[in-house]
Length: 257
Length: 376
Image (cartoon, rainbow over all chains, first blue to last red; front, side, top):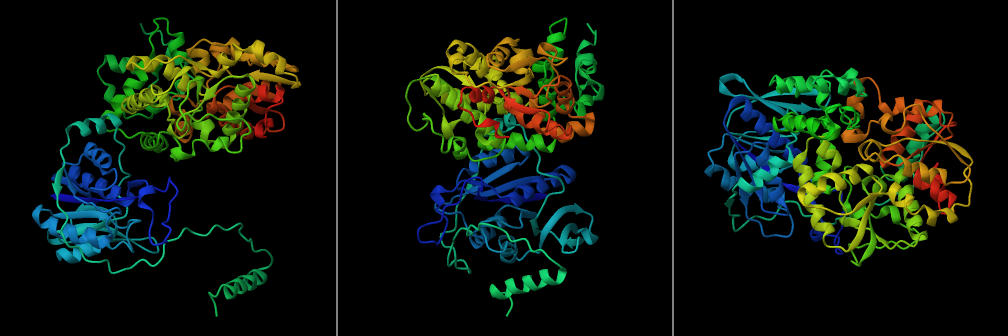
């Protein structure tokens, strides 16, 4: 099976986020980036599938920030092929840009399965996976916590999490797009010596970004940091008193009318 | 030679499926693959007792254990999660906490003495002080860092720090078999240190000191370095006139493994303590080269849950009983790991009202009228 894992960089919250003076975006020049956590899990799940069933794992990423170091690490973990998509903008691609770009690249790669993190700080409502599936006209299953062979009629089984501690088994025909929440096991640690070896040996393939990408359907009106609060109020007293105080607060804040 | 002194000396040897002697036997038998799947691989806390006692001078701590762990990592064996996180944080941020390098100087906020941040303004200094990860970021240890800054300034030492450019030196990672990570840190630190002019490096962290003194030269990175205990003890004549405020307490000193057993440096810390008026120094039943490890070395700092699960105890809990048996009021330490480890152990022993844990720097600073009172 040929699996393509999509990885994206997101703001690293180890560093403080800085908003532009216009409050229309983050100040990308002052933002540090790290690998999107659920994309990390998507790669791990892809490698686990390869180890269990055979095949190849490719990783695709936009050439943004310090993506090379991330790609070396993923190569050291067991990724077979690394593709970088050129990207000359100051900010990372939004979900629609990811989906549109990949929808033109994926058909050229002979891919059976695309795995992508089911969410990312840099997108709205975790839409990159579903948008990619729609563009490819492939089935999509999101919030997946593991994948295995063994569905009926040659289909695969994706384990999808629902509220109420329900873990559903979704049968899916390939090719498909899966939005990964977590891999079947935590992303593996790879010794730094392996990463450094990968940096010496791995060769990136490159792909171009399509010239025209549509405007995202969601327009950001304002970006601001959460206002700092000075205290938390602990509600005390009888149940009735606490309930009344809660109602008063909700009325005062306009939550209840 | 198979005397087994290594295993009988190991503070966790009884809890290991593969104690040191058996690891050597498995290596002879070409069956180390059995060892690397055992929890034993991650249970050595790098105390160096086996190496010091080995009649054939086999350096198990610095060579055999790291080699077995390196083999395990190369074979894809996953280190315990806490240790894995520490490795990843070091790789990404240069400190075990995963904090921003920009926050390295937070300990010095509102400090009344001048801090020369060489990363902003390079200038020749007498002492390049590597503050270390714990004193930079850990609130309890930040008190020690501030007291050290005051002492250095009071002594007229021209000192500077590397601010946001400082990174961990990596001794614990080398001991835990992450040789590639250690090499990366050595290369980065060598390039960093070479940019500045200084007479010597002084460190609070004995693990970092040990790495710089013994292992960095193997990579062509030789820099004169001292742990703060020897640095301050060598200036005791200059310090003595400052030691005016008595600390009327019975004090026992815990020899940390790196300055103590590994460097056989036992007297300077005691000389510093005995110079403080009012201090009555008492010894634990295991002291100097026989001191019991706190359990934090060699990566043990990030394996408490794992070692407790597989070893059945925290060595710091055992060690605190030794301190309590002396009737001491204060347990003096000289390693950043030990403040938090032993303060936790004091709480476990429900002995907060009987025993305080203080770094030697704090005691000196208090007696010199410069200290913050130890924070608690």
